[in-house]
Image (cartoon, rainbow, N blue to C red; front, top):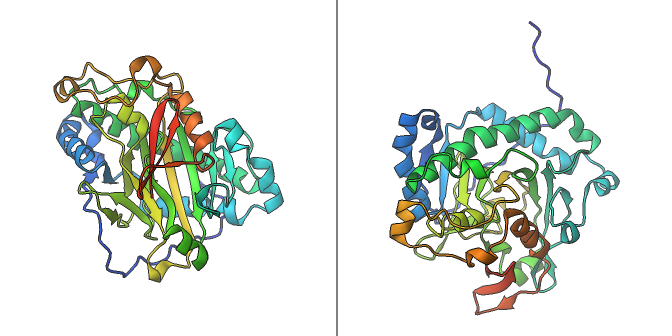
Length: 359
């Protein structure tokens, strides 16, 4: 039987990890391969529960892709930025503020970070759109397969474990997640180095401290250190790179669906350490959302939630649907003038819900 030929793409050579002495976050590691059986999920559920209740961030290993397959995804992830002419990119972008969608390209310097300084982030997101740049066309089967792997082999076990942690039926959170163009987004993102003047004006912050829109964020670990998580003691700590691991965190929507039992975790992106400072930072995400018509109200039938007490961000009557929340945040982020509460926190209100940004 002839070997399957995969399309050629230029090799993305990953840079070495930092040698700087950084204060690393001590995040738990979960072996997701054990979640393939009911017995394995019973074993993992307490680990997932404790990790997400304590840290809100964790690593997942043994997720089913080899290091070589991981490397191939990063090769593909670089294509939208290096193999597509600028004039062609313009055909595959939308007005984010008008559409409430990140489909296709988001260009650099769109979001206000601090004063007159804007971001240096470019990204390309799948699959709300049907058409893609020519360079991506032959790669679409691999990208679709990658999205399906994230959804079925990573997300669904996580959702099952989180439900078990609240003494809910395993399919509770799975049932409000679909596999379609509005429930899971594959995003390739590149951070470009900034000038020293920009770093000074923003105190080296590239993305302010925030929580994510959706339910679960799956980040494929990469070697350039820039991501920091706010630890339980209130300190910012760096997220260390782990080869072929995934970095997982809870988002706003899961916090609302669980009545605050699992809390969205604050994180930010800052300038990399000195030995990585002038490198482009390529990242790969799978962002997940509940179905668009899901009303973001708590599953109050959870015995643990009943014991713990429900912490709502808005009353049930006025709670937004997933679609309303997603579009509201996207239309607001980086465009709305924030109200400064103190020297660390800025605020805005989206869909009647107070949203905080940590400077």
